[in-house]
Length: 421
Ligand SMILES: [Zn+2]
Image (tube, rainbow, N blue to C red; front, top):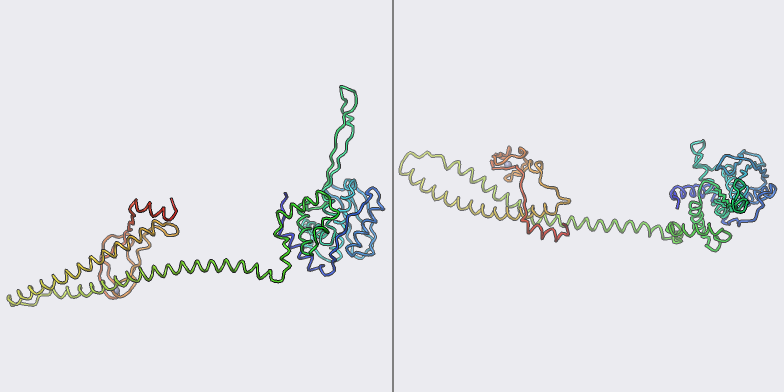
């Protein structure tokens, strides 16, 4: 099957409907017999076709001439004259259906000319205008002539006088197949336009198939199979636009629901993980800040009385023991958080797409957990002291790349749960 330029054809039919739709009737001209060897008969046929599409009072003057190969006919377009000169190629005139199709095409040129409809003027638009002309024939009800006459074949037998048979001394018989194509669109492309125009005008198949050749009917059936969705009669129904738009809106709504579920999960991660961990970090860091400030004072020793000095150091030892135990509790609590968060990171990395692996840039902007200030730290640096410029809190930092390594057995189970290899 040849390529059907659906969008282009629809655009051209819209152009025709806008410019000439109101004065076009919905009838289709039935194919009629024509003695294509008789010039007068061709002139009469041209008049019949022209009057059918509403061009009255024209006189057609037909000439059979030798035209360039693949040119079936030619029409002279002049304003304000009743005579229309049409040339038909000698090759075309061998086929009566081809002559009718050629007349339909040339007269459609005249129709477009009179009505001032075109795809643009000048040689660059020539091809576009030829396609428009073929479409116009169908639009004006000449589709049957076009479908029957667009591709013609003539098979006959003749004696080959260049060869003499050895066995009986006569010339062998050979079969000659002559084929001819008319117009710019081929039968498949014409069939599409024809079906679309008939669907647009609610013309039933009993009417649009009547009088067509077997090949033409076959191409219409093929067209229905491939492009049936363009000819759907429900496009005539009043609410169909709403239904079509409804299809789009319903996939939009489905997508929005999925997006919201993603968002909800993110809220869960935020509420059940990030916020909890952040609160913990803040609470512990704030306490550690206090302890660091206190500890600086503890070192100061202004006591000269050796006894008092002894007693106060004994007290300090008690205090320090208590504080070390408090911080040890924080440390083991931190270990629990560390394990849980690391596990989550392992999962994220095992899921992979769309989650990237850790990269150095992810760890340079950190938060001072004592007062919430954002700090930029050096990239890829292990174990160093950072200091918040605002609250002066000093804390140990480490911006080197973390390694999240899931246990290989667990990873296997996890991946199979995700349905990935
Ligand atoms: Zn700070």
